Picture (cartoon, rainbow, N blue to C red):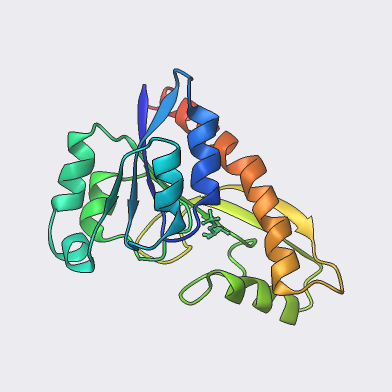
Length: 193
Ligand code: GRF
């Protein structure tokens, strides 16, 4: 059984889809939700779905090894970022090299990097007059939105789109693909040396 930890800072609709996708199966389980934001709605979802959660502070995350130790104590072997707003520190990257994935709501390498999150991404896509956008699932490294791309899916951008309508279309695409791509990634572990 693979043990997944999800890091999320906001609503957590992707986290919910991932929890449900794996629940009752034998491939993986979501063991814990971690958040930097005590008010994040993802914590309510975790409660309803009966998944334990942990809220941590900046100092704990960046200046101690507590989070790594916690994840190791739970036997976590995959970390999934789902709307997590903080850069992952190097101790966590080193402990989980090649085992941290993120989803970005645009077609990287375009519209990524610091400050490119939430509605900022969709506003930038619309302002650029791009005719398509999409999602990118990628490995995480020390630079925002930079690691190896694992999967992308596209959708159209319509002339009358605003950030909200585009965000809704992108969210649907995320829900459709993120759980399945995590599953595919986990299955590929078995074929690595
Ligand atoms: C998603 O659009 C994801 O691509 C981005 O943050 C958003 C999180 O949405 N990284 P939710 O909290 O899962 O609803």
